[in-house]
Image (tube, rainbow, N blue to C red):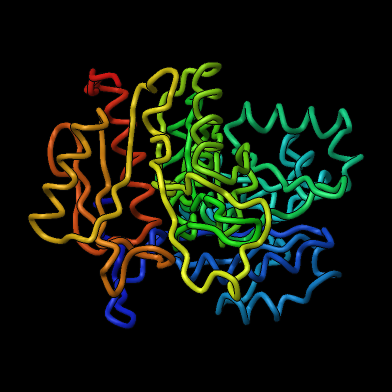
Amino acid sequence: MEYGESRSIEYLGAAVYQPLTNKKIILGVTGSSSIYKSIDLARKLIRIGASVKVIMSRFSTRFIGPDLFQWATGSKPYCEMTGETEHIDLARWADAMIIAPATLNTMSKLAHGILDELLTLTAVTMMGDGKKVLVVPAMNIRLMNSPHFKRASVILKEQGVIIIPPLIEEDKAKYPPIDDLAHCVDAVVNRGRDLEGLKVLVTAGATREYIDPVRVITNPSSGLMGVLVAREAACRGADVTLVHANMTVNPPYLTKNIRVETTTDMANIVRSLTEKVEYDIAVFAAAPVDYKPIQVSKVKIETRKNPHLTLELEATPKVIKNMANKPRVLIGFAAETAQGEQLVEKAREKLLDYGLDLVVANNILSDLGGFGKEFLDAYILGSGGDVASGLLAKYEVARIILDQGLKYLSRGDLTKDHF
């Protein structure tokens, strides 16, 4: 898929990114109490471009009626085998199948070829066609810790089934967050697990520098860009560590997440991590504050006594230059108040100054892109030349830069400069 190809719907003057356009997905649902979340998953997959058909296990219909899935997808769910060829027709129609939620009963049946349900029969038929089957366990934690679950998981992986882990929370194996899960479906369908075995470091969010205990210097970064990069990499199989400061979005559940406050905190954590781990790709998408007060008041500064306040600031450490060891591929961001040729020149400067393999320069003054928005008015420059430019969804930017990073790794076409 070419970059920008699927951004086909215009909304308020901006393209809506639909990475699953023209993709056909079967959603299999089983008898778990979390089945109600699959309604939201179906709707989300449709919103990002997919056509969705639902297969319900017999037991699942005791939790939710088929009519609700028909409302959600626009087509009547399949619930029973009729003795005809539904499984063959469905397998031929679909590009991929996701079973969410997947009970241990269904996973065990699928692993051992027990095809007494249309759901498992269709899944095995798709596997025979070489098509992708994803499984999302959701069950009591004791069942997930059982030898039966471990055995079923091993067998399914050997058969090529992709298991997307549940959200482990409150000692429960829960249905994953919908945005995370839909992103993983998209990533697996469109890219597969092509980052498996790679170690990826990502930074995100806005750091804070305190003036006093209640006042800070910061910026409007939401952290969305870094979160999308981390999620994209994790969904494609990478081992991802996300170092994040203040964010208005939740970090991905699939990544190792480290929370920091100040720019110095972030720089120190990055140094510590890069001393211990040799990362394949590092993406510095955070917005660290560049200056901090030389003097920080230990008590709240009284505005009545200080109607005018002068702050003396000093530069904070450059996080990207504080790494102990450079990763194999280094990707940076440049938030600029520039456009056109000026933005291109800023990108070139940062690429050279920081020894980057790829830089995403973006105009934060754009009406449609920048801090807190879903788009970037961006120019992406690699060590080999232009990569992409224009109004790009941050979701799309995440995919572009990881695609490029993987290309650089495979070619060995990397910047050799060190700090």
